[in-house]
Length: 487
Ligand code: GLU
Image (cartoon, rainbow, N blue to C red):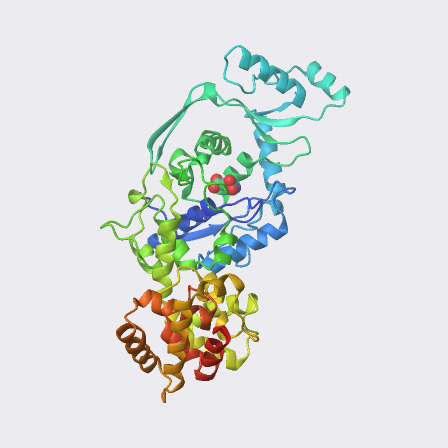
């Protein structure tokens, strides 16, 4: 996708809730394209629907992008030459353009009520016509207008769609054509003067000198209307932005991604402990590929390799398992200090620790033994809580697994061996227990060690046993084994 001008690409969400996977995939591609080309990323909030787009969601969107590392060059907080970047602060601009379109006769006042429109729509459907505005108010006489006014009707501003078609080249889909008989005259501004999406988006893309519009495929059908607004603004065809519509993101079942077939809210991924780099890495693969079957990439590699030519037009399928695998890889690649930084909030929020220095030291010594084992940070509290619980007790359902004679025997033998150990490190513990339980008693490792695991950690799933014993210390380990040996 070539363009002589410096690239200016925008991400323009209407946050009516937490940003979802689809929004973030778009933001990521916008960001990667801007960074790859050395252009600018413009972040614009489309909040003309003030009832659904609230300050809370706007702030959350800003925070989420920052957390993901998707920085912008112009937009909220950073400002820029073409601001303001919140559409709610640009209403007078849209009103001025709507008036200009009326003056030019590109647009007209439409007095049809919602009920009348609906009634006519029903008739169109019944007679197998494409539903849409029928042009009733296109050429009202002065008399007719006067009558509507007398009746107290307030008009909307409606754009006149000429006969013919709109053809443009989408950078991902190639030539796209819309026949205008399926693109009826559309509303630019409501009766109260507030703008609709099509007016605001097109005016802003022009005024903000946007060169590339990379966005979801769901917006493809709005493109001919936006192009109509450009024409009315007097923009030359060679100055239109280049459109690139990204493929849909589907759930595992090939239906559109929703809460039902995959989690959509980015907040959820954050709570689960997916790293921002893993989320970005995985979302980058939804519709794009770096080539060579490579799947684990860094943000720097994404920037280096990202081109629109490598974006696929067919729908991408969301695969949680793959995301988890990538997250596990990213966790393993963290340095100990980085891992500690990510782990502490999870441990503190779940009240496993309160955050004191001595606790942090213990966490630091324990993290290396779980780094290979987890795929999400949210698993950490359950894995490490055995090191911190006061009044440790094995829950009855786990206890019942180790009350049989064979388990009790394992525990007694293990106790007698570890009690006499002079050095409490995981290699000494392991070799003494292997000799006693595997070689001498002839048990299978899984059978031999699972009773012990439950006794000291309270769960049959835990970090590696011998390291866990070392971290727990000799005294606490022995106390815990004794506590589950039946009297
Ligand atoms: N604000 C629109 C939305 O969130 C997207 C605007 C655009 O990218 O053209 O659906």
